Amino acid sequence: MTHPALTQLRALNYFDAIPSLDAEQLDWLLLEDSMTKRFEQYGVVSVTLIDEGFVTRDAIAEELPLLPDEQRYWLREILLCVDGEPWLAGRTVVPESTLSGPELALQQLGKTPLGRYLFTSSMLTRDFIEIGCHADLWGRRSRLRLSGKPLLLTELFLPASPLY
Image (cartoon, rainbow, N blue to C red; front, side, top):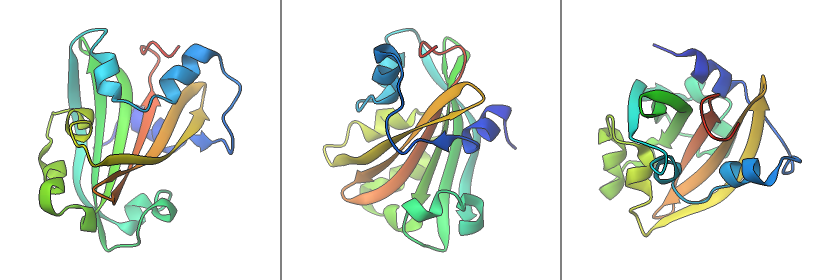
């Protein structure tokens, strides 16, 4: 199953440098803290789970250069909603080698927002944030590390979100 927002997310074109946007938009796109936590300031946050499960490297061809080359990856695609309205499409790619110890919980999130798990870890670091755009929609991707183990998070801000 897929969703049109996830097709747009996969079509994001990333900038080599931070684009010229207004300060409020950059504040959203470069947020280092939990997007879930920011959205909770506006209403009740929920997750619509679109897809999750193991995939091969073919399914993540565009993300592969940013992650270790492995046989399998855990893929999770969601819509993050506020008061039932989709505000963000999210795609998380986790190398199988990351899924050990406490990070096994990444496979059990279900309808729990990723941010509720990630930002409770004192061992979370972020390697980078890249800003992208497609069809007048803005997004970003980040390589995060939990206890030094990588995962890639891509987020597309949907028209209902306060970014616009």
